[in-house]
Length: 68
Figure 1 (cartoon, helix red, strand yellow):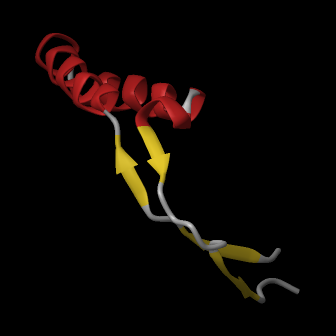
Figure 2 (figure 1 turned 30 degrees about the vertical axis):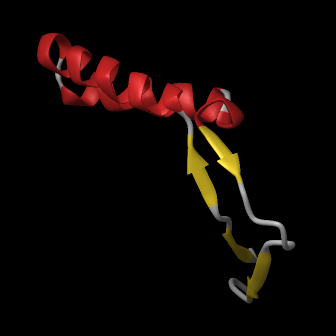
């Protein structure tokens, strides 16, 4: 299976600060594992809500040959 490395220049949006604050509160009451699972799911669900890609150039891709 081939792997790719993608490099993006991103800017954090204010929603990321709110996500981190909520994750800290969840960690205090329900534990770090649940907080990380929640935050990870939120980030995966809507990348654009938390980050803005600011790179004007096309992202650099590098293909790594792997597997047989």
